[in-house]
Amino acid sequence: MTTNVTIHSKTLNQVQEYLCRIITGKNHQIDLLLAGVLSGNHILLEDIPGTGKTTLVKALALAIGGKFGRVQFTPDLLPTDIIGASIYNPHDGEFHFKPGPIFNNILLADEINRASPRTQSALLEAMGEQQVTIEGRSIGLSSPFLVIATQNPIDSQGTYPLPEAQLDRFALQFSLGYPSSEEQKKILAGLSGASLLKEAKPIIDLEKLLELQQIAKEIYIEDSLVNYLIALVEASRKHSAVKFGVSPRGAIAMLSVVRAYALIKGRDYVVPDDLKNIAVATMAHRLVLDSKAKYSGTNKEIVVKELLANVGVPR
Image 1 (tube, rainbow, N blue to C red):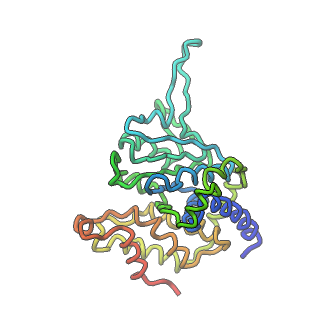
Image 2 (image 1 turned 135 degrees about the horizontal axis):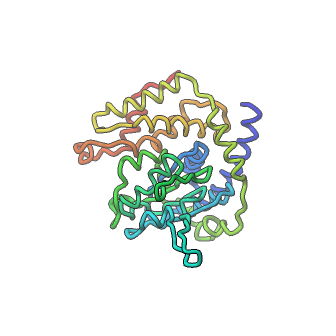
Image 3 (image 1 turned 120 degrees about the vertical axis):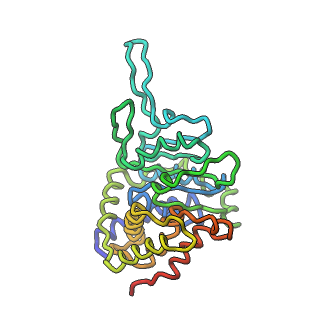
């Protein structure tokens, strides 16, 4: 391990420890969250209400010293509520653009699947190109820019499934899940979660985050592991239960996330276990199962685990 990576690993450990105090017992999920941030990718948290998703994202924004915007997605939300709109000023007789919450470093799209597909689509250009087009002109967004969305399970009342094209723009999707009995006791005692946000201070700044993102891009991955990643992706396209497998964009996202994950683990190189640890979060949501698989009890996570069991690991 190089000295440079050792120093940055200590900084990342401070961020990890802080987030682990906010949401206790979810170390792997926090590693995935940080891997998404360090790789500059967007993240989708799918879980039932009340598991701490919003609190975790707020804590992350505080930890990196970034500008934070939140949009509560509802059925009557409009694209202009996210992007912004030109408003007439009677004093000078002109229209002036009022930026929406998308003009922040971290945009929390809370319960994204409660809004209509038309409103959800307002995020597509921003997520893909880090810009928005308003009244025929393109406006760049802040750097770094990350969308962290939360959604309720699709079978919850009043939700709209996210289109596959939008799901594919999220590098990772994972759940926090229920806390354990011991963690629940801490929450009830006010020793974690929202109560700790009041005392929070930035651990790093945006300049440092951009530096860490650049370092993550330079983490070494040998050819055999790149071939292993490609083999997993191609196997997802040939699986008998899968109609559409992982896209080329998905493979690119996996590569960037696994490099960031290795950095979080304090290494300047990727090992096979890194790919295994990020596989479900980076692959499962990109799969489209065929009708027979859906009704036979197979789910996307099971398919990815089968791929990991069947595709040979490089030695």
